[in-house]
Image 1: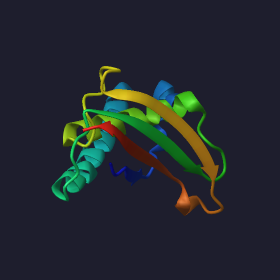
Image 2: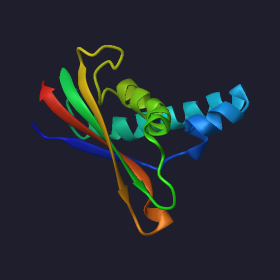
Image 3: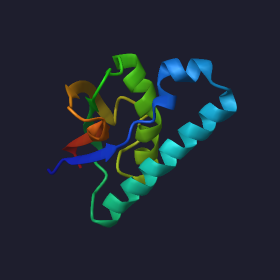
Image 4: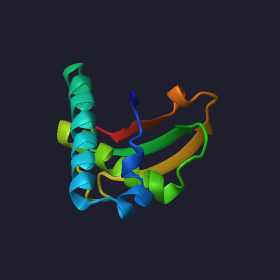
Length: 127
């Protein structure tokens, strides 16, 4: 079964520290934008033939320059992306551990800020 890796620019306004300082309207707008962007990228993969797995594992990798997000900050930032991928049909429902069996996070330092990104890899377990 093939894996799928999708890359996104991290929106620092969605980290837990930024959310705690922001107005809720601004936060909701940024979450909505991230979710919509992920859904568009996901729909492109579905149109190329990606089949939604019944169960899968999800790996989130941050490529950082400067200072990395801590794990809970990365999870907060990635939440709208995961929701957008569910909306697009790239991922199965994420509200139950019966579909996404495992999440993992890792980090890798990059030398240039333009190379900073978040990569989400979907590893199908069963189709």
